[in-house]
Length: 118
Length: 113
Image 1 (cartoon, helix red, strand yellow):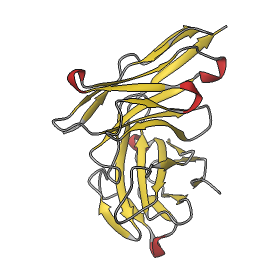
Image 2 (image 1 turned 135 degrees about the vertical axis):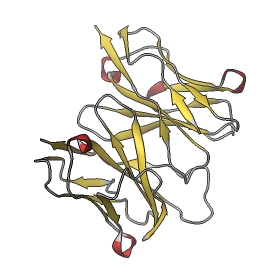
Image 3 (image 1 turned 120 degrees about the vertical axis):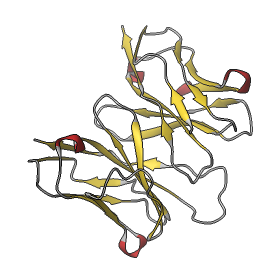
């Protein structure tokens, strides 16, 4: 079974440009999460989808970030316009159930997208 | 707000030595607790998780962690380090299994021959 995949693995853009990151969760996983790790700091939560709905977007830093999950499958995270402080590694994770869950539910992480804003 | 503290950004051990990575959480209600590992150029992989079923949790690759409510700790141990254990380790907490994870800052484990 394929794991969580993210594209691209690396992106280098200039300040003011737009970048779109993509995440493909494990097939059948209703929950999709985005996290970010800025250099040297902790991994921080950005938002959580349940299917196509935003369950929790309390971690989104500002309105330059837009996340979508059309059809409840893959998700995109767009940064427009990018700023220097947006540099970091963006992780996507998915987990199985959207309703009643069991103790086996775990967030499975992708390899991350390293974003560098110059 | 929930927080997770990992003491030591870097821990160095010799091959065959005990590995101890420290994690403390701050919460009025014991949360679910996790240890993830990130090997170079890979994503985060779950090592083990505490979900209140048992205080001593065994994970993959002979890692284990013990939940101690009185100390609000969830330290990760392994009896004998291998070179392949060199990676970055993250402790995380969540109020339930479907909510966001709150991570510590990570500890990089260095293993020398």
